[in-house]
Image (cartoon, rainbow, N blue to C red; front, side):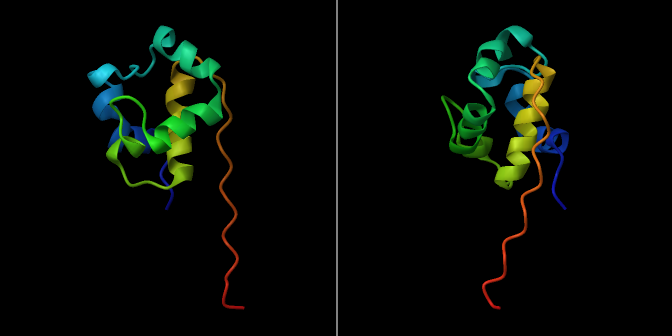
Length: 97
């Protein structure tokens, strides 16, 4: 089952984003999240997936891109964004038809 944004945050992102370790913007810190939110959802997801600064790809986790995008929405919205929850991707069509 796909993890919620909050579940992914607790499992992976909180290691740095709960404490501000390694310069990570802390959960709920609107001043720190503001400029990042202004860059837009796509830019935030790209940074989360590929890594940025001290953060490695997915912060070192092993979640789907969809789950990471949910975590981005969860964290950004705690910092003042009003991003919509991403939609579940459609299942890939089977190649063996």
